Length: 259
Image 1 (cartoon, rainbow, N blue to C red):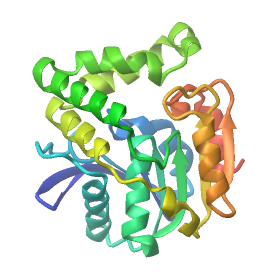
Image 2: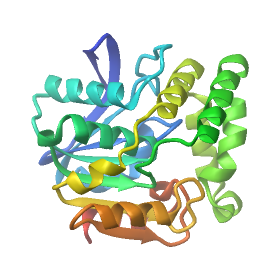
Image 3: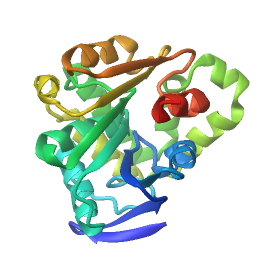
């Protein structure tokens, strides 16, 4: 693990392998360890960089809303620090919101996109209210209420029943997240812009992946992106939920590496 001092943050990241640089952006409320299996699959042929986004893992948490643009600018500052001009940008869930914000801000720095289990639309009024409720609970009660609320939606019933090690891993990522960082990200996601109008402007190779049983960003969201992004490739991971890269890691990695 390394740390970069950028934009007033101590930003933690891992940087392994050699070749075309790939940056993987984790979802909420996780950290860079979400990508362990993908790093293992890619590092023989790519340089793989996995940052902890603002407020997560070992990166500094700030109390103001952590907008998707702020996180995208953090990633750009890390790339500057690493002297990387263009990268393949991969993402899952909230990381997809950051990836789309990054593409809008820095399109010339993206050589290809991977958008997994995410959506382009802004929150509804109900979703914004729910995020504020969760933010308040995180600040007042810690991460246990977040884990209790999210775990049933993040993973399929089959995973809960048959893969307790994955459930435990996801719970650990949630429970070790800073409540301040979680609240800031929840408030940042609540005010994110609708990126639907950006999709037709994306002109780099784009891979869209979704779990067939994703209850948070269901396959129809992925299909919408696929229709709007010219030349994009859509892959549905059968039997996976919102954490498709964990629940069906081997299949996810085959799609990712085109094997």
